[in-house]
Image (cartoon, rainbow, N blue to C red; front, side):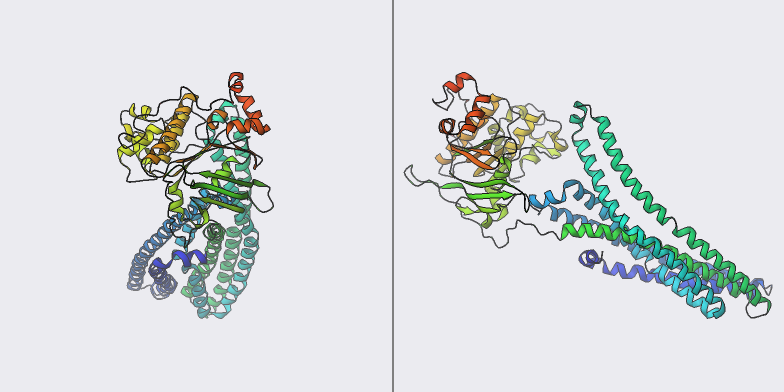
Length: 617
């Protein structure tokens, strides 16, 4: 908690000074109130002097008005501080989370990060607000009341010295057992958030498999587990108030008994006894509120440690001091040495220390303008392999190079503008088609957007929308079909003219005709780029379909993270048993018998006229 205050409390320092100062003035008036009441009883009621009663009554009223005025100022300072710090912490958390690599995101988990940025920050906000408002009030009121009571009569003050340690002992007993529960509560909230996210995002699958009862039971178990912990800590906390008030009331009884005797012998006045009772009540009530504050601060401390854990997590992938990389020039003639667009040298990657390699000793080189197809069984490491190229993960050993430069030397912004990735899961955000397509290039013109949509085979259904590019997109793109979402994400990657396009099984929802047209359009884009004197588009296609990768210039067959075969389709069909088995499981007999022939379909779809922006290309 102290670390968060040090990091985010600087600009709210004046509020954190003004607020407690105002509260301190209010406390001074609270401490003076029993003395004024004592004078009212002794000089007004006891002497039957109405003027004295009115005089002291007006003084009490004036003190109350002044105290309330300072309280309102303190309340505003507390609100400004807590809400301001909460906003800053959330902003810093969100910004830092977006800097973390996939490895750190995998470690924390999305549900836990959501809980930390919402519930945990709320706990810290509450603690800050109560700290400004109450942290100085109750301790100062307790100490001040005790000193004032001892000043009235030392003998009655001995009752304080007995009651206060008794309450402190109860307080210590309860807090020592409650603190571990508060940390468990936050972890169990993470579990509830995880189940909610899985159940709601996968609602269609749950209903399709009639698993509603199972999901309800799973949620109920997690909720009951969290509730049982909350009830356990609630039972412990519930001991505080009854025991504290019992001790306080016993102390008041003792004061009245002893004080009554002293009044009879003339050692004390009735007003002094009432003042002593008020101070006793204020002292023990303050201790109760201090105990409640400690509960709040304990929760906030657990939440603050979880927030600091994220903020102090150093991203494993950074680009500090990396200078911009000069892009290579395309070969002037066919006889020139080909420029390497992508190169992997003995690259391996694992998801943690001691874990088996998800990618194991992969070596390959892909020239500019060529197409690499990656195929393999489920869990063979295809997605992990292509994630190494834009540095979503860093290779554990070996190296990955783009345009002849190791990806670790690239500024991340430049690398991810050169390399466009279409993820396996089509992800759109709420807004419009235009706002989704301009992620890579906010200055893209409508002509650029339509050219990308044409290449992605998405222009037809977008043109059929009444609002065209301004068609609303719901959260997650739920108002589009799976195939439409995939084509829109492909178009988004093509905006901004990337030099390398990675399609991670991103055409799985497309029919074979649309898939073939998409690949033909991308190949035409590469040819046009070279014809214009620029860099041709290099493509990496991850797919489970042989028909999608068979036309690639190079095919990489993965098996449990290792390269089982590398070459063209005809070569692999002859030399790689795994690739041959995949082909035999997917292709018709006629295709298998003619596979040694041309790999380019005779009736390849014609690229749309607007694939190339320049006329005549």
